[in-house]
Image (cartoon, rainbow, N blue to C red; front, side, top):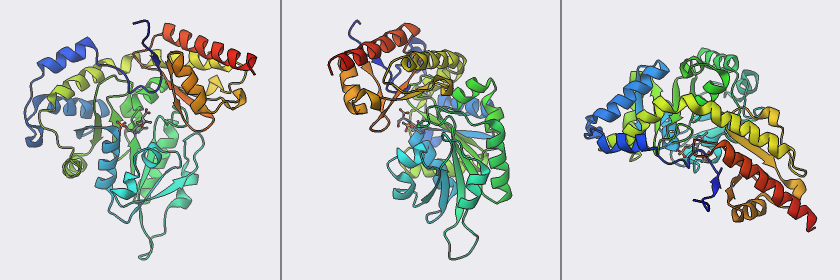
Length: 351
Ligand code: TLP
């Protein structure tokens, strides 16, 4: 359709492919609260296998996946350490404190990447009258830092040192397949030391719904109870898991296309006077740029752009995020960049 906008708001906006819809229609189902849905069971077994873990659990969303893991690792009154721009801190409805009863202790990572040297001082001393740190949370790729990828050695070191200190480490790996594609490695190689990993089927992999948690059998059993407590026990969820299985098999292979498109978009935007972005820093499928010098707020910039059928989201007053995904082609990206270029040129000429 000529009028369909080029939707770069998120990689969550993709529609299920014909192959996914067919798999959904034909899925064998059962009651998953009784653990009798064969398609959910297959998806969980496959996710555990890909990540080299004992077990896995299907959850309705990334937010619930993170929350379930946090609650399974901790008790109310504990502290967790995360980056100051972590998604689970900033964008999950304060569920850390509002639901899990945890106190987040923030670390200022460099582009979302924390080092052990930054984390260590944030660990509370083991004194009975001090709230205890029980968990460290990393995010890979880091959404609000622009899809940045953790150097594997750094992530491994944080896990090793945390374990030495008696702490668990959770990975918000919503886009972990993007990180693996960037590094040219398997996801298991970059996640093996984490105590739990949450990853999304419904972002770059293209499924309509759902996330997975992977970990040890004992941990996943605890997560199953927490998921039920939060209302996330689903019944004939095989119709969703069927799409997830297709996403898991077909999604990862094509992510490098999204990364090439993001890099291309960043290069085009960098040439537009008034926009600030360093394309060399774009590693995966997220492009964040600053529009301050155009004289418009990010909200006004996006409203004008939406009138021209290109969509993004604001990060703050000055910055805009655009995300590439399987429902946008190179041609769409060329058009989107040209639209931004024309719009900015018009703004400048009318001022
Ligand atoms: N991120 C969404 C929005 O909430 C911003 C997006 O469009 O990027 N962890 C990370 C790193 C995420 O980016 C997201 C979703 C989540 C967790 C939560 O996943 P859902 O939306 O499935 O609850």
